[in-house]
Image (cartoon, rainbow, N blue to C red; front, side, top):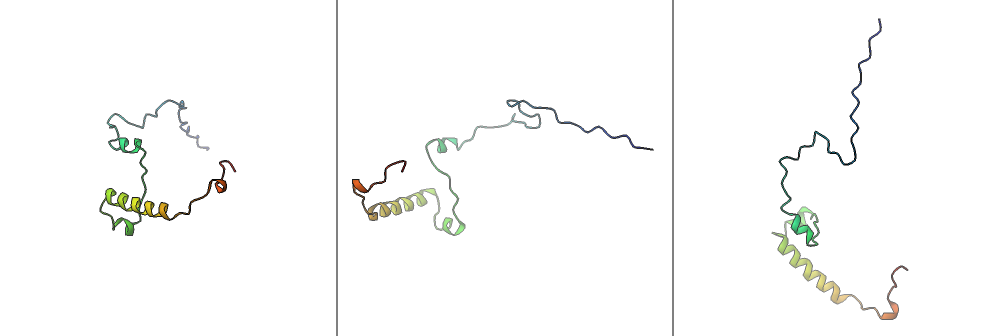
Length: 88
């Protein structure tokens, strides 16, 4: 005696703009940090040993600004004739 095959449940086709029923956004809230990213900030992850040196973002930014100033000061200046043209 052969067993009857059970019908496999086929997923309902969902339109591109349709939200699936298993996603419930009824209790969603706006992202309170979104304004920080809109200002052009970049989120980075520091290694634990580096993060241990800086108590917060302000101190890390101050150190990076000081380092960036040193780098800019010690970079050799290129003459106008030696600059690389965009697209080359």
